Amino acid sequence: MSASGRGESADDLLAALLDGMDAALCAFDSDGVLTHWNREAERILGWSAAEAVGRRGFAGWAARAADADDVQERLMSAQHLPGRQV
Image 1 (cartoon, rainbow, N blue to C red):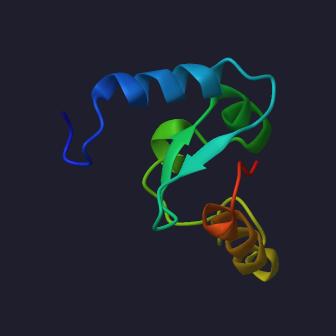
Image 2: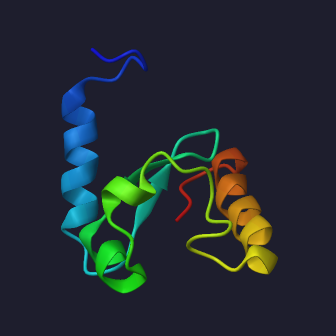
C-alpha cells in the first residue's frame, strides 16, 4: 500500500476512469494539489499530465490569476459538503 493508505490499484482505477471520459477532468487531494489530469484536459488546455500533476490549484497556468482563487475555493468546498459533489 502507498503512504496514503490506498493501494496503487485505486490510483490506477481513478486514472482509467478519468482518461475514459470525453470531458477535461482532473482530481485534487485535500490540500488542493492536482493528483490526476486526463487526456482530454491535455488536449483542451494544452498542459500534459506531467506538467499538471503536482501543482497546487490553477493560478498562473490553467486559469487567469483573477479567477483562480474563486475556482479553487469552489472546487475545494465540495469536500466539506454532504453527499456527492461534482
